[in-house]
Image (cartoon, rainbow, N blue to C red):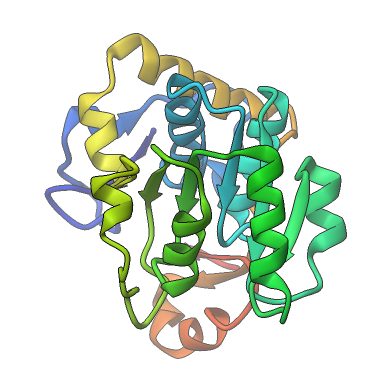
Length: 243
């Protein structure tokens, strides 16, 4: 069983949560992947489904080098959507292109705005999937066509954006909305949720997806070892027994 703790902590002999926050696991799913099943994988599947429902042929994706970003790129490519991947630092371009990104833009590059403008004119993306919530994300939306949607699912930035062109929302029909997996789990029709859960587990069981665990920290040693582990690239797993 994989679950989101909604009424108590997860590290207990007994945990209380909503039935809608539980997923029965199939054979072949590793414990590491089960631990991460209800965050990145279902979020990626749900948001790509939103993009498809909106009729999107291309999307813009921030924080594209993250584990969730890589899942989104793969799913978009498999479903025939073009992805403009945005990263904050250079170095991940080849890996993201190999996963199916159409183009990778580095937001810190001097010519970022010009590159973005050219791609937006060519690809006409109307969905921005954003995990950062910074000025770059706001500037991306500003460059996108009329009726574009900024779907925010994370707040990595220390400082929020300044929205200086409100006419974009009044006259161009642009919008900003939030995505939160717990809400989606409660609101999604049962067949839609079941299909997403089944696909996520299939991808893990067959090896298409794999949780990148940077470290496993024993629960008894968490206060000592967790701060250093969190500086590593990848997920940190808390384990009840030996590492």
